[in-house]
Length: 145
Image 1: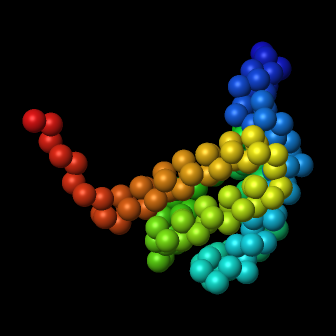
Image 2: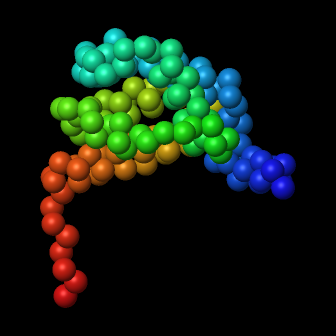
């Protein structure tokens, strides 16, 4: 049964048809966060929150492996972690996506880069909505008429 589940996950994983590998994920995560750490807008935010980069990079490789290859390795609560970061704004997410797009374009074949970027955009949107909701910044929902 476990083998059947693993085989199914491998077949339906979004990264599988475009050739995403663990090596590609590792290269992308490390290159992307190298950019983040020195970025004038994002570096101070990330460096304030992350005191030991090696475990963070390992977790991010697990995260992207779970997203792209459906390995299930990531165990965590990204929303809760990001909600706790003071001062996080939409401009930070726009810059995060810009740097992610650059790294993906440089390191991945075009089809794989497109899937990575599509997932990153969905993740960024979800995190932004969750953060805004936690801060009470979302407009009230309109009642159906």
